Length: 315
Image (cartoon, rainbow, N blue to C red):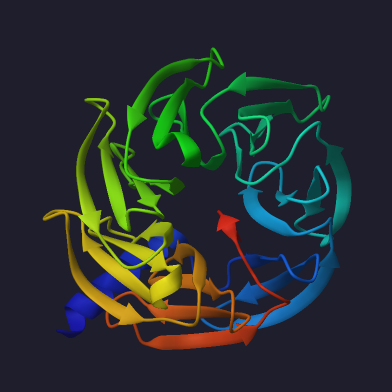
């Protein structure tokens, strides 16, 4: 038993680095127009509160650029935060709205879902030149696959996910899913895309090799975001209206457990053996153990944290 435990710790060290690594958590506080920053070493330590634009929601980190990109949903702009200085480095103006945000693997382009113009804004970060690729209605979550060379955008009001070529920047396919898809997450092997359907209360599992919806898994009410365990065997889904998190076994593609979370859980990510998520109503960020889902640490945030996207920076 000791040998097994020791081997697991070595595996986690190799995959995710030691707890001494530079790990920062960025929390978008929609109600207080700010971003709360924490360091994380198994517990949260508050570092700074940064004022951004109006009603921040989406977040993406780039280890290549050492920057964090914040979508300010009510002020038509992206705030760019320097990871080291923890200050606003620049502001990118938009011609429309913003919600989901993601960065290209090489750090050269920023992808923003323009909710009102029904397009994916593609911004060249060196010049800030932008173009819009038409997608479905009310685009929200974005995932980018380096392996597949593709971008995936959930269209809430079209009940679909569009696939965009990363190199050609054009739509190459569209897949119908459940009612009002919102959050997206690639499996660790990038062979599957999990999509939360907030109206039909289920998760669509898309087989990216076959370009089809493989199945739907019923979860709680108003599922919002998804993350995977470090080994990819489980997916954790936040259910806003059920105040819970559903755990999907990715082999059986069925819910194996649902446990209580904070009130109105929203954004969720993985770091090592931890699952980290925010509670919108309790205004907290919470870390739980992946194995038994016990709370290991929590901290107060600003008002109404959202964390829609990838909010963990690590070396």
